[in-house]
Image (cartoon, one colour):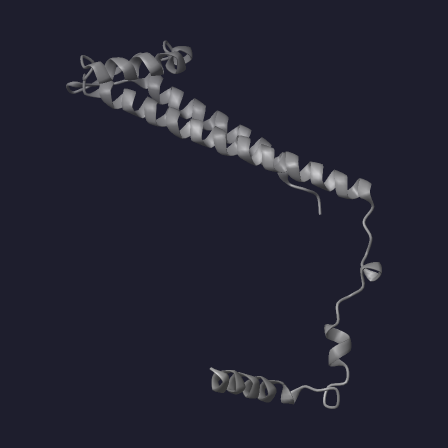
Length: 153
């Protein structure tokens, strides 16, 4: 154990022989910590405003993340509704719940265009318009929130 400690001490001495007060007289002055009085002082009001702006920026980022999550869930629900309606799978309990949950989101776009028959399938255009409208709306809100967070240089 002592032999190992001596070896470590010898290696440490050999490592630092290149730098000493004789060979590098400026090195101790450079590596000493700067005294607190020499550091630039920022007033408490500016520090407080900086902290408040960081708090609001983090709140806006969280709101943006929650909005993105809500959009993903809504688009998934509307896409499932579209697929179920496309293949005429409207009689199951799952389809009932999907239609029940998605009806309030499709209702504003319900009678814009009629459903289009395609061979033996049906294309629900109102669901497609709802998907596009919600995606566009959330993208616009996302860009607005991004403008709020960017700080001028």
